[in-house]
Length: 397
Image (cartoon, rainbow, N blue to C red; front, side, top):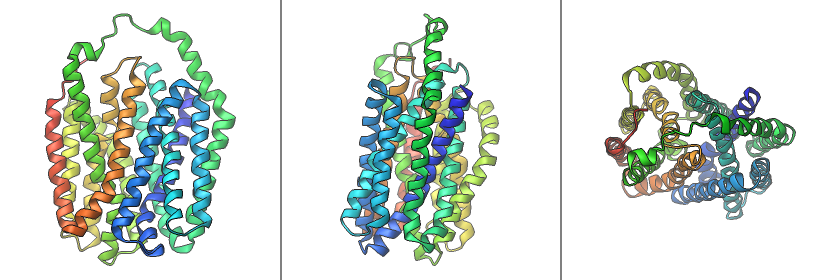
């Protein structure tokens, strides 16, 4: 099981490294290199994320009903073919087709990675929150490396901006091909002992909470995940144009993500110890975290100096360190051995939906109103969503 966790962390870090390569430069590339409008660039990322969401859903079906190994491989193969096309063919609108197919393939792969994670979390009694935290740190480390490197590589070579992710995903294909026995065998061994370990008196949260309240829990959490990612994804999309418009370089923009990941490595372990003592209920930790994330955007309307962007990102990092690993932990707390995978996919799908709508909705607000109105709107909606978490009924254990 330790080997499986290691390979899962590797796949997750590599996947997010590619995300860090692709997302920050796409708004700039579509607008400046392909000569499209900001609205079209935002719309393109929306369609990209929408296809990723469809891939998330299809990946869950393939993972549960067919083959774990081939679900990962199919997703990676689609992504590699799309990236090869993007490497050599920079013509609109065919670039848009390749971009959305990339999202589709990545969606399939990401759900498969989360499926493995949820299964290991289910079989590893008492260790699920640690696993989610480690996967979250691996993801952020990957994003930081990718987004930092692409700030330099994009200015040096557009070809390598898209070809390096091809190499990363081919490496992932090789890992899945040669290490699939490790990934599957560990789970199969867990299944053999699972019937012995399972407690017949396991409490079903849906019954303990009540079906109506349980359904309301899922609605509130889904809305919260969606709104949170709509706001968070502005940093991956419209913020690039906002910072460039204020005279900052692509490198300075990408370094903000490096600061985010580096500070996260220090902040999250500290926050985990503090939060576990302050909050007995996970929903209250998420409530405070989302509020902090929303308040971080209040620094941006008047941000003219670079340190203001850094401080905004640091505040956002504190909030996300409280929220992102805790939502999967809360979903895990609400689940049983029969529906744990399905509930975990809720976070992936709603996150993809938020990332789909966020860039385009943000670009529309900026075009119709201003960046300042966008930032104030994000703060207001995040606080409202945070307050709605009071309506979540959580079992104390």
